Length: 273
Image 1 (cartoon, rainbow, N blue to C red):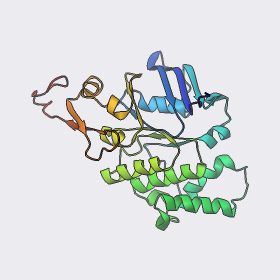
Image 2 (image 1 turned 30 degrees about the horizontal axis):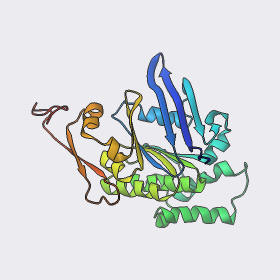
Image 3 (image 1 turned 30 degrees about the vertical axis):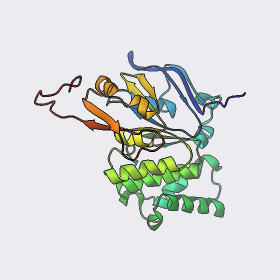
């Protein structure tokens, strides 16, 4: 029986700066339609890895394939038709309305100076409606709240119609409510998503698969219940915690992390409780 080709395949990816190794022999395979979370402490290499995947950095060695194509063999437009990116820091969009920012998702699909069609306009307005921002359509993008800006960038990604959506800690500056709403929105889009997280419980609740990176290497991967363990939390994050089952678990157990405290006073160590 013929097996499907993974949407994203990373083979032996390494990246170094000034003879300092940042990423080491990364191997990843992500199937079409999966929602995959990337976890790791600050400085572990999460953003560096994602930047390699969306072609901001070129790896020192290794290969990244989107379906069967080397991403570095694709033109900028062809790559942008297939991969959308939402970053942690929202770029300033001087004098642009929310509508204008969302319409930028059309750019890879349009010829230079080509007109926006009625169909394009309907696509933009539908994307804005899908992320719940219709009442802000003509509002200046820079006047929106952080959560509204991130939802607008997801609307732009909807218009872009990518196969893969890469998100680099897009919720790190948002209130808890908007963190949950934003990532649930991303999951509802029906595209393949690779997102880095700070919040392990949010990642465990929403992701199909998790990747854990430590010191530039993938140190764990699999289903959330396989990856989120007390030993991993101690070894990788240096924290003492209890992993239980989230009360909303249904078909599969959703791990839930409860952290212990007392590090500053010396009452607790990461390897014991």
